[in-house]
Length: 131
Image (cartoon, rainbow, N blue to C red; front, top):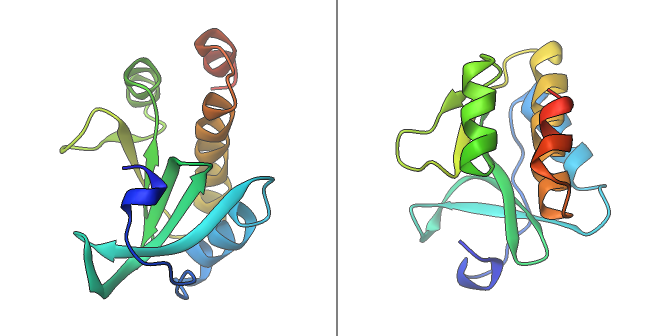
């Protein structure tokens, strides 16, 4: 979903420790907009933090520390095949990654970096070499 379709703006909420580390890092990347992720579009229930580069979603972090990261279908397939992320059952445009410790926070940031570079125009071949 494009940023201008996300509804009202609210700053991102506090997340579990290691997801919070990821959230704070993402918010410092050039051009990234961090904001509240609403539960299924209900602007009364906070469900995590969204991250956008311009109008395009990088992904979001849920309150339980689960990351949903926006990727192209070929990149998704490569990440799942390499067991670096799990498929998102509702969309081929995302992968899922659970953040429970510092090591997983670092791996989540690598996945978000792939999403960022993809939106910045990096070719798929370049992204695949970074796996």
